[in-house]
Amino acid sequence: MAEAILETSGLTKEFRGFVAVDGVDLRVQPGTIHALIGPNGAGKTTCFNLLTKFLQPTRGTIHYKGRDITGLAAADIARLGLVRSFQISAVFPHLTVLENVRLALQRARGGSFDFWRSEKVLTVYDDRARALLDDVGLTDYVNDPAVELPYGRKRALEIATTLALDPEMLLLDEPTAGMTHEDVDRTVALIKRIRANRTILMVEHNLSVVEGLCDTITVLTRGSVLAEGNYATVSKNPDVIAAYLGTQDA
Image 1 (tube, rainbow, N blue to C red):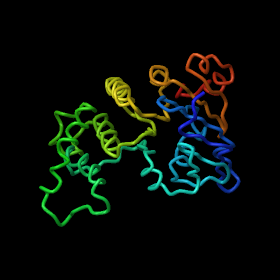
Image 2 (cartoon, rainbow, N blue to C red):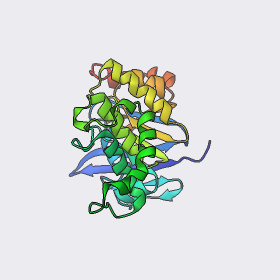
Image 3 (tube, rainbow, N blue to C red):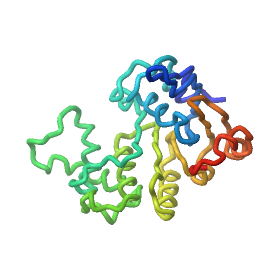
């Protein structure tokens, strides 16, 4: 087995005695799409927040590319190439689609956001921004204000701005949540396109999406790992079936 790009050991998060994540050992192999699934309250998003350091673990360690990142801040994690999206779309609503991606590309200029300079300074990023928008199917929307995009297109824009950070590993939190069937299909196709030369870890409720996309699935319940394997393996696991039985997300 190849060395994991992301690995946790005994990852635990307690909130005043409530154990939200309980001793999770996770290994994500490079170049794969790996899903975290489980019924509501299983600890998936808390685990995501621990991995990207929006929360600090109570116990346990996190290693990325062999480096212990347990004590690093969220911004430092992103600079290492481990970048996440959020369940709620996070774009600048009154900027155009192109401007949103261009703003993300400004990171290359360092700490300066150039608010006091002419907008022409930033046009150097236009070609790259348009290429990213083409990758996510937003070529026809470049001059539209982000607020006017349909929900599914906003999620595509968020992924484009995330890709502008040139992540080696991408963490997607509920990428198809709240989408129409058409938008789900479009997002699945998008994730398949952007997986080249990247590792993707995703939280996802839609099991048909997981089945069609993911190489490895880790099932959480009550904060602990219940099962792991490919879809064919975990979908037949009686403990997994019992954990999902009667839930709307199954």
